[in-house]
Figure 1 (cartoon, rainbow, N blue to C red):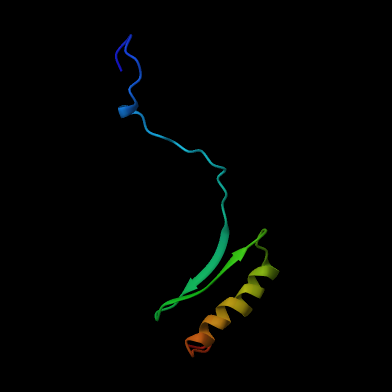
Figure 2 (figure 1 turned 30 degrees about the horizontal axis):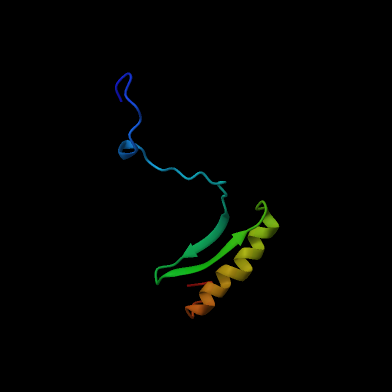
Length: 70
């Protein structure tokens, strides 16, 4: 805008502010397709990672009729 010129709505962009929230997820994919996805509520430690592998990863293999040796 030029000095002394009033604002023109035509050149203004409406902006809606919101609280940004992030999520933490774990997922996998294999040569056949995508696997299970799980949301992690808090930090990821070794115990939780093993639990995810035992649940989500092994369920993905079972869904596609694979085993851990494949």
